[in-house]
Length: 240
Image (tube, rainbow, N blue to C red; front, side, top):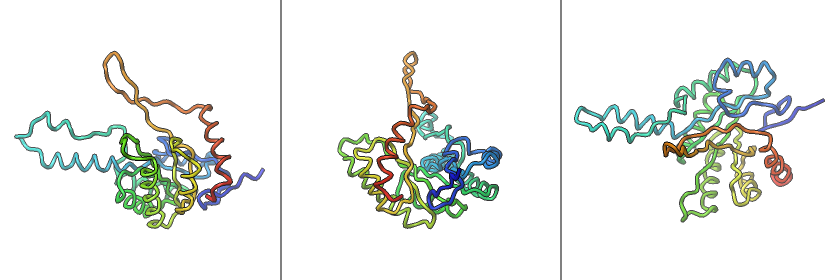
């Protein structure tokens, strides 16, 4: 049976590949995935917010003195769940590209317009064959319409597509007012593919201790239905 396909302009023997996850943040595991037949490797996301946090921490250590108040130092952000720093992440991208023969797809989660462009270019320089934009904004501002949020996302996509020479895909959430309309707009901006759908880290309430705690819920087969439904809807409506 011929399962060959084209994804993001990349010719693949079949469409099976590991997505962006901790599974691909270890080089030995990546090699084993290739040996097992993975058609491509999608690397874990580079988070711009981690870069910002590290810069703030560096500034703190450079500026703090013996007269500093210990309580004030606790307000600096800390992201223990983000394991690779930006330089390490970029270097890891280069090492993976050198270690495997299958296409390597980088993933980027930005927060600022300049950050999206800067890190997209750096990931391309490290040898990524394609780039996945992990885009989501928590809509907590009641004065911002969905149209405004999507316009800002489209502006980022347009800029990234115009900056890099590698194919660009957008990983969508399922929370857009009109997924079909937004997907077509992304297609018009030059994206090479759409990924349905993003999964998010969630929080829960630890009632006995009155604390907000992060939770990790593994995916299950029931999540596939919505993805297949929208895949069938969008397949004939976009060219990516």
